[in-house]
Length: 398
Image (cartoon, rainbow, N blue to C red):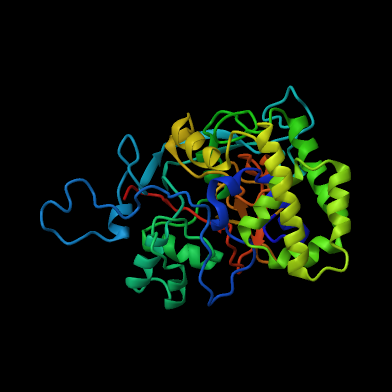
């Protein structure tokens, strides 16, 4: 899911059909972030004012509160930044299955490792209203609870997701606010509540897709088409900016097969950057034609990750539970864990290969199925990826 080949990155761009029109060249290039390298910004979707002073602060002459001071509070009825949301004790059916449309938690896109659905009992907990922020990381470093190496996340925008941290580093940040990473069960319950819905925002795929069949068909068509270009794309891709990736991805939907084959043929023998320029020239041409005919889609990924989650009936008022950055969880990954998982507060044991469960999908998803509330992914706990962040939970109120 997270580490894509070069053709995969172009397929990723194809899936994010309007991201380029929304953010231009500011989108990140996805991949492993070297430990000493600055972290690339995730989507330019702020998580709320995670460093704002609490009500009344700033007017009394008191010292400016740190990001940690502002996080360590229970959210008001309408969350006004990064704070902890109370989630009451409850029982729900975790997981999904694709075999029986009349049985609980049926999802035709569910994988085998998402089942079997099983009843889980959880005690109350408090979970961050947004993904953990870079301001939280810097506060952790300043307090001496996190190593100096984690200063690499320091950016002007401290309310962006703290992406590019490995599992251990994310755990340290959560410990600094008296918490930990959420268990897989806690994360899933927080994303959808006790009821059944396939995405945090409801039971229908996000725009521009209208049905599962359309979603599947479009995803397969893009992957097949980009794959046909083969070596030409592989040479061109490393020279493209993230915005150019996205621009090319948009164009994939509008080229005819004949036009696309001609583009691929034109790449033969060209140096890498010249091949990229040839792709982009053809992309601009086809998009200008589509725009003139008013064929471009009208909804954007940012509307999914911000407006839909922030303003519609997402359980507990949480934001960013899908499609912004994927999120580390406490659990070790086991494909068969659900078969005999404990009924009360289950936690997957650390796996032999050191993989941890990652939930929520990210802006690099090839299609919306990766954003489903039951979709499970895993990563080695020591990787640092641009499209992976986290949020924290506490077992007691802050």
